[in-house]
Image (cartoon, rainbow, N blue to C red; front, side):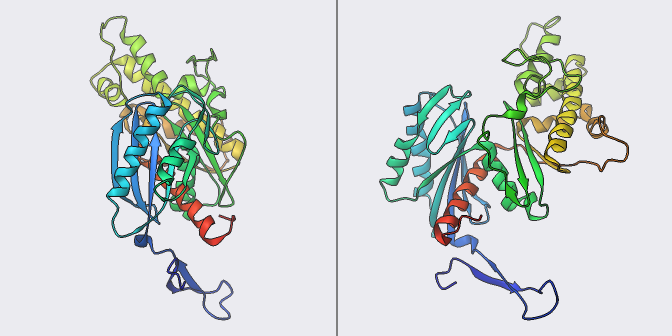
Length: 347
């Protein structure tokens, strides 16, 4: 408290109602800043956040090259720009998130960038050479799970699953308020589980797996295939265009959304049941399809394979904004800062 890292917020009441009242403490959010960056195959999203992960500023720009050296150079430029725009708050950490398996600063594999065994040590050296904080590298779904654990659903729920639907399928778990750590993190192990009634084909030739049924490219391709019989264009090429065409009467697009909705409900049931949880956070750019009026069967199908008296799964939809992924990277930096400052690894 003398250092100013934590301050008193208000008095609390002990659980027994006896003894001295508790004193609730908090980290002053406006005195500390963190940078979070999310890298996809096409875009870089960057945020500067306070200690409560509230976004103070944001920036997005296209990825100029998939060449690792060029891409890392572009990342450095983005981070420097955020550092130069820094206000009076102290920059405490930098987090970078991206898809795939990450081991320390080495990317084992990222199919969106076409990277295998890429060492990110160079970006660490380049940024840290200016005496800035260490950089924390984290899988994008892991970072998003940390965001929910610390500043989202985890504030009122001890056990839940985070499921992301977009260019890929990902999931993370929180049990007893702690994120589940696993050597399988970043491998997308639930993305190829079979879904009853699904017919899509994934890149490995699986018929009816989650990747072939739920990823946005797979859903769009099914709508495109149906339209190709009578249309020469390549539409739809985005979720927004898919919804618009469905609303204007395109039956192929309507059917693609209806199938996606049914398959997603089965996926949510499967993942939640296997994890022994009732709460599921849905995020990723594919979640916007649930806003379509052709997705109104989602809730009905959430119990399609459950017993009549089973408790109902609670689904918490998020915006799907890519800035949330960058926000998750910032949370990874916040947690690392807490560990470094307090000397405790029990976060």
